[in-house]
Structure formats: C-alpha cells, structure tokens
Length: 133
Image (cartoon, rainbow, N blue to C red; front, side, top):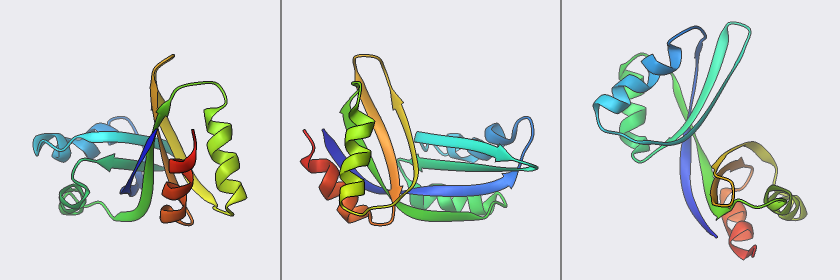
C-alpha cells in the first residue's frame, strides 16, 4: 500500500452527449494521461473530477478551451482490492477527524485498487493511509 499526494481538477460544465469526449480531447492531443476520473450530472450540469500525469498543463489546456477549472489537494491510495478495504480506510480517516469530500476508485478483482480521496486534510489523509496494513 502506498499513497501519493497530488491534486484533482474539477470542471463543472453543461451536460449532454459528447461533453466528456470534448473536455478530454485537448489533454489527449497534448499526450496528457488521465490517471483517474469521475463524472456525474445533475439537472443541466455535469461535474468532472480528474487526476492527470500533468495537472498544471491540463489546467492550462482546459482553461484555454474555455472551461473554469478548480484544483484541490487529493491523495491517491494504491491498495490491494479486497473486501473491507474501503471500510478500513474510511474508519481510519473518521478516527482522525478527516472529512472526505469526494472519493472515487478503480480496481480489478483480486488485484489492486487506486482510490482517490479529496479530504479536509490531505497530509493527515496520506499519513493515516500509509499506516494501514
């Protein structure tokens, strides 16, 4: 298990077919890898949260494409994909009085998971998750 302190980019935009493809096009054209993302909609808007391998450049490209982009400290936790691992992390963060604002994950059965945590305290989040075994 390991943690990486990074940041996530948040774009709130109109919703509709092709919005995600349009949003990530300038990143793909500039060879920026989207390492993890989540997207959801409500009403006529969509929120896209993404972590890339070059957030500074991605933020510039998205702003140039007309998007308003905010950035928040985020921790990526690499962990085995096993039953109860999310409960273990969430419980440990709760014990440390860390509020989870947003979380999303990728994983494969019996393999590894990457879980992104955007919280009230990224440093405490990273330190807490590093101690979990």
